[in-house]
Image (cartoon, rainbow over the protein chains, first blue to last red):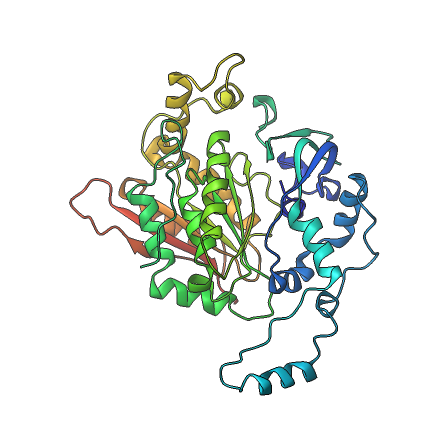
Length: 153
Length: 254
């Protein structure tokens, strides 16, 4: 299960929904695995406003991953700075205009790091714990189980 | 015609096999009227990527279709897809279906999150879903005992596979909808206003004739001002007892 998925999940118990402590769910005893995935730069730039950054920092530190900066990167931070508009113009000229479409931007190290944490760092085994009621959801073979025992439904 | 994702790796003894209802969802989501509706809503290049949630993914054929054809459907390539299913075997199978369908694309690869094991949308953060898709268990038939999911979802110790009894329970979960075939759908519809994003959320729900689609639509319009429900796809098979429709549910800006 990818860490970005945790950005969209909460405790499944109804009465927890209104308690801010039910988000994010806290990983515990987690075994992580890196699963390589294509880097989609447009996606990374556009997802920034949807990220609950503070919560992502919490999860990341609970997993013992390198500390994330206090504020999220800006879209411009995700592109390799050598790729200036001037270069783009030159390339377009060199390649003869019409055929040359928008020059592909190169992801910066910041983009690669963000991609790694959001989409390549996966929880394979472990638990996700609600900060409100303390309920533990198991993660097995990368699949989180949010089904509740009968008495909690 | 956009290609249908492959589900050849899925064991249909315990996971719902793509059928007429699944294909009606594919046809509707890629129809000119729906792609134009969705692109109006989501195409703006720098807006945040739409998050698509399918509840009850089964084989994953519908979610994989959306993930692989996001350029044709949404006019953008950064769509996020997420699934849930009560059947743990379906969760694993569907993840593979979606991953394979995305991998087949030379370009325009969208971003697949996960399929989580859960009851409907109960674990979804409120107001985070932009596009919601649901092909419910809609057949009027007795509901299985939902509290026994743990036993049915696990391969018994020392065994290599699920038992026949487990398989039939898991398949029953995929089609049996209780009275009028609406018991599960009604529980899900209750969650829809809570999980849909306030500004641009839209839901696609499949119903069969016995679910009384006109009654369901009228009830949705009564949710409050701005709520709409329209039939946007139909199997058109008037003679068959299982005439299917797709209802689009959305809230218009006042």
